[in-house]
Amino acid sequence: MEMNQTVLTLLKIMLAVVMFGMGLGLSVRDFRRVLQTPWQALIGTAGHFILMPLAAFIVVKVLNLPFELALGVIIVGSCPSGTTSNLINYFAKADVALAIVITSLSTLLCPILTPLIVNFLGGFLEAPPGKEIAVPIKDMIGLVVAIIAIPVGLGMLVRKLSAKVAGILEKVFKIFGILFLLFMIILVLFQNRDNFWSMVTTVGLAVVLHNTIAFALGYFVPKLLRVPEAQSRTIAIEMAVQNTTLGMTLAVTFFNGTVAMPAALFSLWMYMAGMTMALIWARRPAPLHTGEAA
Image (cartoon, rainbow, N blue to C red; front, top):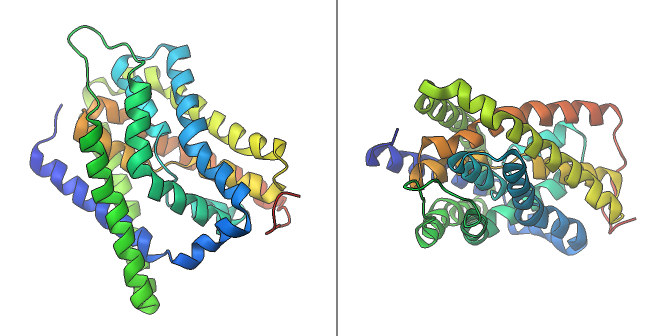
């Protein structure tokens, strides 16, 4: 089931509004943490564009997913942090400042890296004859710049001009962002209503495995690199909570509702898993170290 152009245009505008709201909560000062703990910020950001896409590719190959669903899983794995990852880190009593930096950096890098990764890994997927789907990399880069980079930049500009106004608006846009995510999930599920259960049984395991691997790699890789406990927990949450709203928007814009299905299911699962881990870690909070690796 394809969406008409009016609906697609509306979805792009709504996502741009959500990202403008994210920009309202950011300032240049937020990026100072990169200078204080560059190793931690680099590990967290690289996890989104190296570990997550590779994990997605391995999962779809091992499970031998159909082409369109496999492409959808790879799109999810190539997205930056979701804005709610910062909130989950707050509930987990982790390093919220580091979470904001990783979310910001991965979001600012995604206009270039997300389309490139989807195009590269998508090229290794085998499509059935007659169902080949070309990844329009130039169009995808242009769209992500328009609905991510520019709105975030404008939001940061508003905050620089008036932090008070930005603070008031940010609360409204956060609510809008949550509602838009719910709308996207419902829309994608509705599009796939005729074969919903068959898709869930096909891609559900892939979503759970992908998210579980994200938590595991996000936690244990930093630990192996001697990143402190609190920051390792932060990176794990950042990697496991993706910007699935962006993933669904890209999928329905350039492909179809079937490709968007993994992002919709990932959205539902990642919040349950994320909040579960947050509650577990909040019971045993780790001391915050703002310096480099211990």
